[in-house]
Length: 270
Image 1 (cartoon, rainbow, N blue to C red):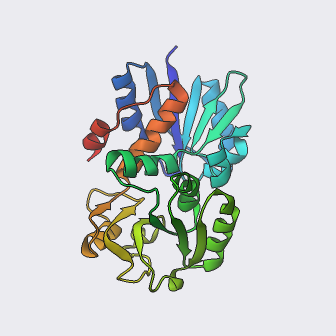
Image 2 (image 1 turned 120 degrees about the horizontal axis):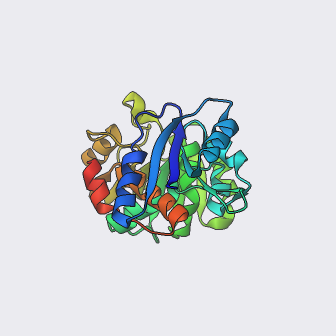
């Protein structure tokens, strides 16, 4: 019987995950089927049970079910624990679920492997303290930056997130209004401001000359934050398409034990 995988979310029809995982499977010579599931809010556990009953082996989880998946997992990786969210469920041999979060490693791999960024010793600014940011903080700190500053419109949320992770490295939280006079080598946008065509309210001269910007969101056109980076002297102004493919590759590896090549898949989606 062919192994089944899927992505569950609501909405879900826009998801590129089936395309990505089908390409990985073909490349790796693995027989599997990957589909989309429109999840029903409040019915996550039932949706998962049904999928497993139909022969499912693992799930990717997207908005708004990542916290539900965290609750549903019988055991969790350290990065999922820190994120408070799970985007990958792995069915274990005994019928239990292991939950993982591959977003942060996807971001780090896109920056370092695909684009050659050096995060070690750099000053990183992470904009936003919501779910997207929570998912990437631990893997960023594992790269040993000189400092990681989490800045959020509501300072208290950023301070709280930073204090939860203090033992992992040099991390601090602050309000967007406390950034004046500071410089960063890498600025990562984890806010949803771009959806409304906005850029977080940050000082104009905050990016170090030749620094990098990264928007976790992606679109067919450059996002507003990518354009902000380009107009503020970034040597690299990247969007999150590579992160999307890399987090998928990590999920595929956790399920199948094979690490896919990502360059061609990123190119295909572009």
